[in-house]
Length: 524
Image 1 (cartoon, rainbow, N blue to C red):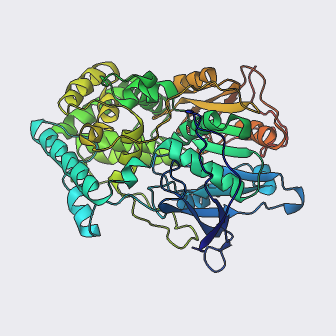
Image 2: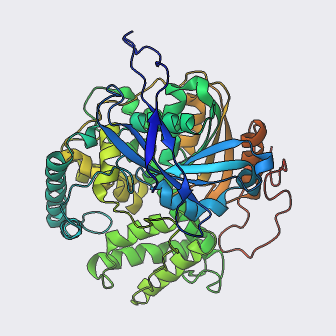
């Protein structure tokens, strides 16, 4: 990627303690084509490792841009974070570019970046070689640990990871907080010359957006938060007491995933095997078939397909259900039912960027969420919490409890966490979008986000899948386009429907597909 130089700006506002903080240099983005023939431009931004020491050590951020398709009608820049934490924007924005509404692509330069600690940016890497990383990965079971032996191996593996990271990246792991990344985002905003920020964040990107909105409330022009994390839940209400619950337990991810799996099985069982290969002829029979399959896999895996690995695959497969995601999941489950090895899903083609497959080790996302969000420090608590969650939410409860178990032995807390308040009045209102059947971020978290922010409007998407951007609705796209372009919010209580429900034949949805002000499918 292109090199970067810096220019200086005036002083920042005083810190909370009253002492003036020197200004960080604004990155200069020297754009060039990512690769020959690519529609995307790449650059590198240099930012401080620690914003309390802006003249100290720096790190690099890999940045990608797609210019507005209709430059004569260009509104400005739309910054995008693909979630995670740990999603490499330089890879995922090009992969998902066509998911943005056409009018947004026409009228905005769309920019994303690999957040600090991730991918092609200055990255957390706690291993000396790819072989060392692969050896560590082999020590952790697919999905989550089952049984005393796997739990002991899991705990030992994450203790080892913590030791490695403390040895190899002690400073970096303390400076990859969401607040640090929000400050990076403001640096990038200044680098492109925008007076205020237009932003689209999905999943973890909603928490980043909420953090930015409360650190820099006067700089918010427009912000779409899609697939939300409840900021109070994520920060454990800013409590200084030792956490007794996990991040995703507080968020409600296990219950939301269970609800989504049940919806998938209900719709599958309500149709024929021609549309859903796993159907047993009715919702109840299909649910029973699924439960029986999981019980069988506990004792008799199908090759590498264990019980826990299958639960994880089901949750992950329900992130993107159209086109074909739900059908592929049904085919996989039917293969396992018939004791056949499922065909691996084809990987998406690499985007036209210089490094489409950066190292994305477990330690990168772990550094962010363990540094930001309190989790129990006793490894033994996770089994107890997982079994209690399973009693409430079934198998997905176990999956989401174990998702943050690596935090028990993580060596660092972020030096610059933001824990609230979350209701600072912003220059312009924020649009919050939530799916009703989401395997990761529950609709209740979108409701909580809309309530926590000082000025936000909730748009409900009656849909299966994780985020509306990745499971599109013409109706949601129409509202998002209008809001991003001219600030018009949906009416209070607005609800959109998924264009094509899973396992149903495609049908015209009517209305405006690309967001020129249409309101197709709105229920008031």
